[in-house]
Length: 262
Image (tube, rainbow, N blue to C red; front, side, top):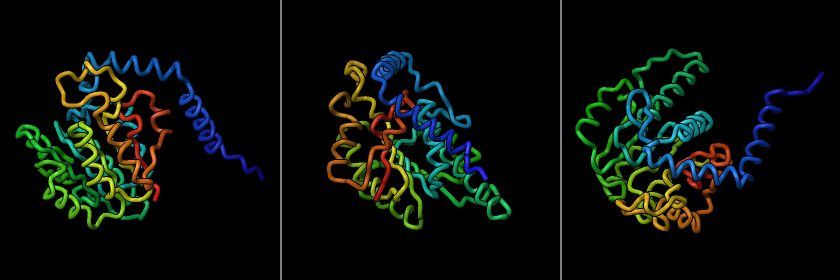
């Protein structure tokens, strides 16, 4: 009887392709040039999730989707809400996970019952965005907290929301200064459960020309990637999952997919 597994072979071939992609300096250079040029055309603003702007590369949307399926979180913590697209993207995936759990357990599935949830934090949730999020079919799975993501009271509220969760994913995408992101990592990365991910977006700022951010308080040398590097110096329980950025190539989060390994 043959032990040949075509799916396992497919995965091995993919792993080899990802490894080759990661070694291609030419491709990496072309990709960075493309990202720099695309930024001039507001590329990240062009996509939506279930009707709400998400302000992400579609490649990163797919990566988060894959990670949620693989790790099956029951709580997703997100800093930065904006138009709400990321909250709704996460909530829709959690709803799908709930449905799949019910099917696997041979239970009835009531889409109005939320077993999983998303907690979103923003210092300024604009009224029109809040209204649109609250009117969305995914709203029952979303908890919004208005306030600074690094203020003690907000951190405590999020910890309370996370108290009963056994699988937690964290997505950081608010202010992109080094100090702010480092403070967010110190506050929320520890809530990430072993085997799950803390994703730090816009680490690509470190790799882009400084003039792109002339009107922002962040730029090369002061950004999410420098915060990640600083945080990892004293937190060996996290590792950068470089296989994700090698596979995506086009990503706003190089060195930003942090897997909790212990």
